[in-house]
Amino acid sequence: MQMIRTTVSLPEDLYNDLRLAAFREKKSLSRLLVEKIENKKEVKKTLSVEERVRRDFAFFDKVARSGVQINAVKAVREERDRDNA
Amino acid sequence: MLDREVVIDANFVIALVGNEEYTASVKKVYRLMREEKLKVYAPTFILVEVLNILIKKKKTSIGFAKNTLKRLKESELLLISLDELIRRTGKLEDIVTRYGITSYDALYILLAEQKKCKLLTADGELLKIKNLTIGLNNFVF
Image (cartoon, rainbow over all chains, first blue to last red; front, side, top):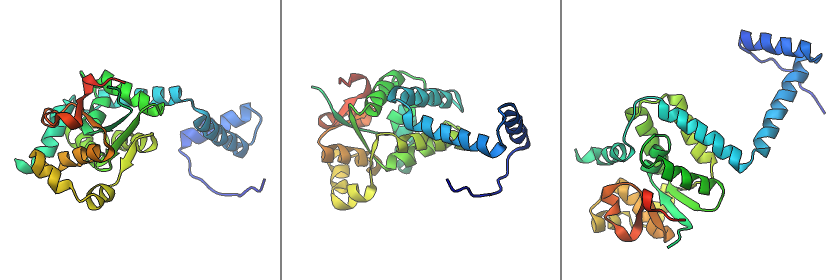
């Protein structure tokens, strides 16, 4: 596989964590990064419907807890009637 | 009657990212959509409404709002462009006058009419149009 040398900027903490992980796993930082990215792509491709639904619901629940509590029906009605006010 | 295709509107999505009486019902429908057991349509305008409500009313972060829209766009939700809905059908004005509703509401009713299915909504105004709507808590699959 042809490799390309490039420069990326990483947050210092993340860089230190990755360097430590590479050292522990006896790999180069480049190899570790490629493996992590490939694994992530693989996970995304193979996620089951159940897993995707579970992730979506976990995210939606997080959104639900954020901001202020609103009544969906009332909020949409106000939005649609705003030009008639 | 079993419904295999439905149109959803913004209160479906806002209930999905909320915690209220309709949340459990919309989650069931969302799951059916993701499992490709139910065809779910919405006009692309739903993204505009949802974004506005999340930011202006729910006051959620822009990151959460963007991610919510991303999940909708990447899901099995079939988004129908306004061009297809308004220009090609030329019926938006008819819907507005026939039912005495706003043009925003009319987009969803027009889509339900076009797809020959029902709009799944919790909105009292739209539920008055009985032949084209079904209540969120009354949906049977």
